[in-house]
Amino acid sequence: VSVSTGRAARLFLRSLLLQAGFGDERRQGLGFAWAIDPELREAYAGDAAGLSRARARHLAPFNASPAAGGLLLGAAAHAEARAASGDAGAEARVRAIKTAFAAPLSGAADAFFWGSLRPLAAASALFVFLAGRRWGLPHPFACGILVGLAAFNVPALAARWLGARRGLDAGEAAAASAAALPVRYWTGVARAAAAVTLFAGCFLALSLPFGVRPALAATAFAAGAGFARPAGGTLALIGAAALLGAAASASGLAP
Amino acid sequence: VSPLALDAAGAAALALLELDEASVGPLLLSRPFVVAPAIGAALGSPWSGAVLGAVFELVTLSELPLGGRLDLSAPVAAGVAAFLAAGPAALPLAAAFPAGLAAGWAHARVERVLRRRRGAAARRAEAALAAGRPPRLGRELAGALAAQAAAVFVLALAVFALAGPALSSVWPRLPETVRAGADAAFGAAPWLGAGGLAASLWRTA
Image 1 (cartoon, one colour):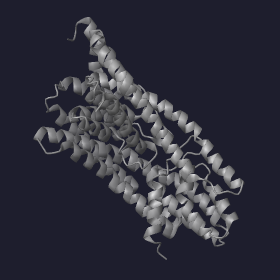
Image 2: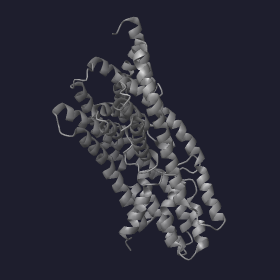
Image 3: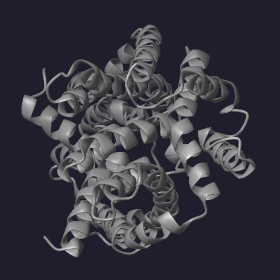
Image 4: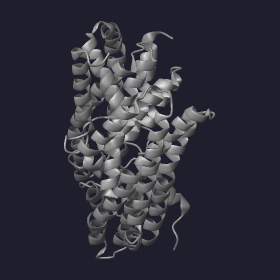
């Protein structure tokens, strides 16, 4: 039986606050417990002891990629409904969904949404800012921000919505079928698109009258590419650039 | 609008946007490419905001917020820098950049403290369940969100109202060497960040 749109919408909206109580001890545990609570109240209506046990289960430490939150919440709610109706193995399946399924799903979702779509969104927004400046396009900032937000949020919110709906509908089967999606391929495509957009933005920035010297920009780019990781991050290199600039000024090598 | 009212409005806007970083969503509304141009545009200097947004975005983008990692609060850094450059302090971009970095670093430390304390909310909910009462999960989450927003508001307001005017007065009097170092850091930052990001995309592809 397909779940109602209202239930899926409620879980989807609550999944947006999955991280609201994020802490070192329980991670997203508090947010997960709050998001799933209406489902638990419906499943355990008339069974106060069962409801109390289920609520306690979901206060346990939990951590997942926010984009996978809708699916994991939906699948856990589905299993809780089965547990409330007397399915003896359903409680164990709730735990499996929040541990065994959550880890690989989150790994794939983090690589795609954080590691690929987020750079693509930012690079797209910056490219539109620069293109607006270069070719005098109207409202470059609003357009850039909208393009960047859409690049990330259309897939991210779709994943949450479809995940919540299918998780409520099919439980762990939905989580298993999500794990079979070609996320690695999507991740590679999004990374390539982010890299191309980043390079295009860099070349566009050099063509604008920002006073950037191409040789210095290329040197800094190469230093960032080669040394940011060994140096412990970009901030260390920025500190080194500050020292070099100050030294050049003190020695009279730079104005 | 009095300067303090403007500072408070800027701090409140930043506090609301920052909630998207690790509390609500995330929908990327807290990323520097959104926060800094929005603050710059609201203060009548969209390009200052956009340039700072681009720099902070490139510097922080290759750091993934996985497992609760928190080295620098990018939204606070970008928002503070944009406000200091486009707001009443009117700092040069090269001065607003390190001020934003310092504010982002400070906020990351404040948030670590907030995250350490949030375990108590779950324990209160468990105690309520053990006593046979329904846990007030919504209230606990609302409290966490309010504390998060309040921390950003207080930090940003302090920077805008106190550090902004002080930096505005001190910056022109600093030795030329110091200002040249800041200029070099600001000029190199987006290219260093873009290089680091390109390498990160290449490595993980």
